[in-house]
Image 1 (cartoon, one colour):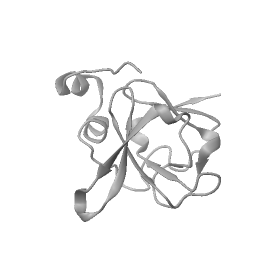
Image 2 (cartoon, one colour):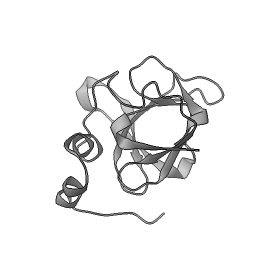
Image 3 (cartoon, rainbow, N blue to C red):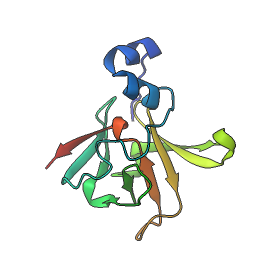
Length: 130
């Protein structure tokens, strides 16, 4: 996959402040505040920075964690995983494979069939309804 590379100034010009802080600076939106946390709309969630398809709504579930949760990405190649040891925890960060936007984290406590919970910031996503 061909990477999109922009300077932080270029990203800042195209994203709103919250999108920039989360996607480019690895911040986290407050729990239960994201526009897609409780959304049930059928469609495909894309990266807000580059429009790469990331998750199908069929893989979305209510984990109760305060962020949209999915049990699998649309394709394994859609994201990269990075060990995150910040905030005194060991977690697995997920980033968009095309533009390196910080999306959230993946945890091994999700439902079947994968047992995974991709905990994703709403601000990183754009839902395209079917």
